Length: 97
Image (tube, rainbow, N blue to C red):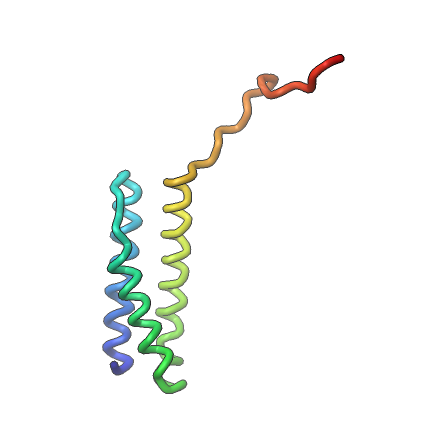
């Protein structure tokens, strides 16, 4: 695959991440298997590219990595929401003897 084709695949992956984040925000369960396959295919292609060809893809790859990190945060928040802060004075107290 040439660098232009990989750029196109990176754009598609970024779009998939954006769509997944949007769906998660609405409470929809998202199947990420297609995204996983797309990212693996991109990584496989980049790993066999020449240094010069791959160097031009670095900014797009860095952006995709950031987008994937934000997606992971959204998934974690959805599956394990943060606990509400304890109420003032309503927390546990140490037993008295």
